[in-house]
View 1 (cartoon, rainbow, N blue to C red):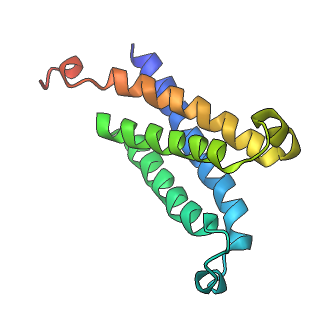
View 2: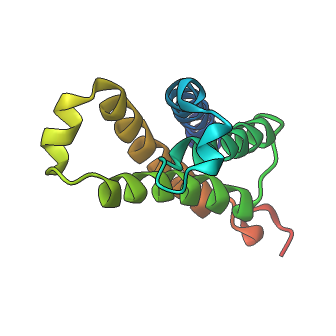
Length: 133
């Protein structure tokens, strides 16, 4: 059981860091203070930077060995929110949009893998499992 938890923790950490890096790679070149003045401008850079920092914080907490269900819920929920936000943002069918943007394809694939890893960690980090409940 510890090997499964270690593997899921490693996958969750890598997924969180890869998704954070991809969103920063996309957002930083588009980040400009002039976007704050234009209400029609794309607001995604201002959302992606804090989300990426949150994912890095979750990955660091997992790396330090914290076993909290809330941490797993936060990481998985953030990745799931990014994936569902992409589904709501695109106007094309999902496969068409993903084939046209390889960075989005990698990001969405890693997000789904990360959601699965965080879900397994959520299950494994039940308080009764370690005798604390």
